[in-house]
Image (cartoon, rainbow, N blue to C red):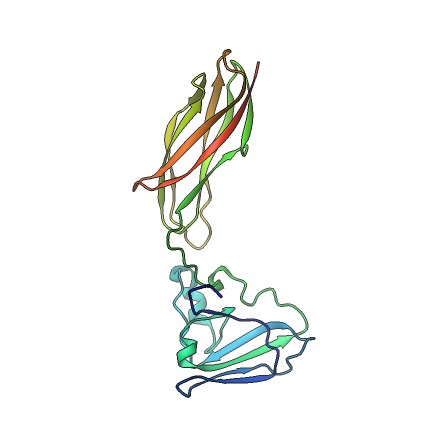
Length: 227
């Protein structure tokens, strides 16, 4: 499923029964009564002989996990341990889709985010704005979380050319830790003013750095100055 990792994605079974004998003699058995091209949708799955992987966000899943019937498997993937432990999977299939099975955020396969940035910046309106010389225009800059940790981002606006003025010119945006629902982006309003000496295309580069010194990709706002 993920290059370099042995986790396995589950797809609709093609055969009513399949047995795979592993190198140590253990077996991985798939049972799917009535499997056919007309019954491709998974409505339920039970797995025996395999330990369910720990949740990435246990606080969000504890109640669900405790109430699951024994062996219930609502994950559309199998951990790498299945290739050593073996086990038996029994599918319940149907000719109609089931939008509930394997669709929750907690059922998603693990994300291997080594090197992933904690947040990304953006501007509103995105990419470009128009300014009339001598009249301030308001835009918003913000950061959106790309992880689950609390993140503090320091920003600094660098206008080019110097005839552009940005107020405020720097600040801090703080993202709360993600819980069971995604963290909402955090924004701040900026005022851009162009002097009468500036016309045509200009830009404002907003540099972003986390509190622990990580540099994030900058936000660049194209500014079209009108006389």
